[in-house]
Amino acid sequence: MPEPVILLDELTKEFPADPPVRALSAINLRVEKSDYVAIVGPSGSGKSTLLNTLGLLDRPTSGSYRLDGIETVGLKDSVRTTIRGSRIGFVFQSFHLLPHRSVLENVMLAEVYGAAPRAGRRERALRALERVRLSHRVGYLPGKLSGGERQRAAIARALMGDPSLLLCDEPTGNLDSKNTDAVLDLFDDLRAQGMTIVVITHESDVSDRAGRRVRITDGVLTEE
Ligand code: ADP
Ligand code: MG
Image (cartoon, rainbow, N blue to C red; front, side, top):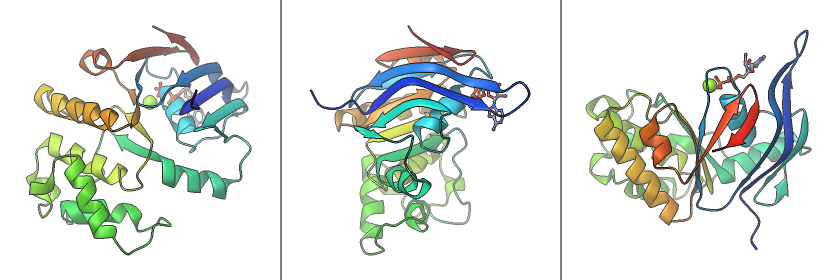
């Protein structure tokens, strides 16, 4: 049996306050390679905290998080940052594209602050844009794209480090249903290539396409 991509064991996250805010409460979760998991739940229930923890942006208060078999909780910040850069891609509701840079430049800029070698950056960006079927838009400014194309450009940027796990916070929240479908089709393509995808969503079209749905209520996770 290969290691699961994500293995959470009694993962708990408290934010300091008086009394402390328990955002995640003893969460157990196992996600296999190529799974597509939707996380649903009301506002303030802990969804973003869970995604930030999975993305190694937030450190849990207690419990275990094994990513691709690596126990991450006790690792130094610098090691966590390296793992994040090489294994995890992030996609957000707002696309965070620079308006005065072309699609290709926006995707290439993913690596400016990373450890990736400069050589081959353009080729990697072109390949990422091919994966999201945006090769015909490389020279466009973001303002000339549809919402769905903008999100695909942002997904191409997330693919630059060749991640094995894509973490998405309301990725279709700014899209109409046609563009939502295009992004969901792209997720299917990426999964067929071995990508594991975790998506926070309020939209039933997005969670219905997921293989699995988990619900968070007041920091407690239940499988649906
Ligand atoms: P959701 O994404 O489901 O809306 P969050 O994960 O953002 O929920 O928040 C879960 C709980 O943790 C909320 O009570 C929120 O106020 C609290 N919280 C989130 N981030 C912080 C923080 N940085 N400091 C203190 N409390 C936080
Ligand atoms: Mg949130």
